[in-house]
Image (cartoon, rainbow, N blue to C red; front, top):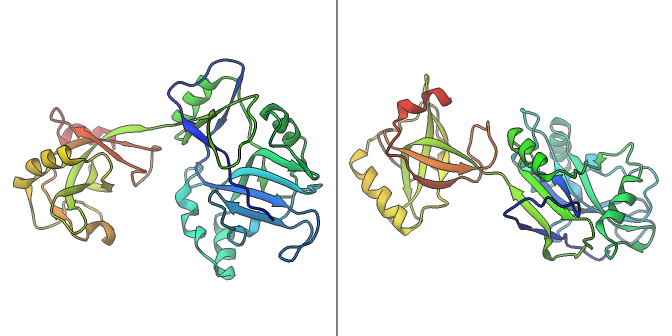
Length: 320
């Protein structure tokens, strides 16, 4: 089986409003190409499902609950995202993270039973021996929606004609974002194209510095440990390194220098991997941080945005 790499989207600036575009939820999971074989080969049986990652590695063994082929599927290749829901009922990559590198089948089976995955299939690339990548997206979607996915762990997610509405709805629901695709776009394996645009939500919040860590093998401030003030104390929310360049590092180092303390200011436990090498500080400085998603105990892909001289930790108590 030749390895097919997925087509990639370009980061967009404005959600397209014309009828030439359709819009989908941007799923927070594991991108995967799925192949249902027609005939047996040296490494798989007829009708077997094979899954490969966005870099071409075979990941079939990690997802046993997705290997029941859809009814009537015959020599198809699809593109989609493997997702699982967190305790809030929202797709969350971190729920899947521990499964990605597990190879022991007993462990895989236990994880699959505890948090079952779903394969959200959003494109059809081959069907019955016919290569569909040269067809426009509107035609590929039409054929995809005609497939019978009953009895499998696969689903075809909806598309929308109102991108602005979907963008706002996914933001309010704490989803990762949206992808906008031209109706006439052909599928270009392994390429990043402006015919597909992605719009990932970033959420900004204010947090209190509780410590800092230097760069590996160095002494310059490279990341901050931040928390959220609550009535139960300062609760740890994560480590922020992105967005801290040379200028920001120098500024922050000067601000935290007189605030050093011997013990953690956080009311809850800081993971050992974050606490190692940390210099603790008095929890008095407030910073703004951009992050993906809302309502999580830990910040997701956080990025430092600046110091808030106009806010104190007490000002944040009502946000907990």
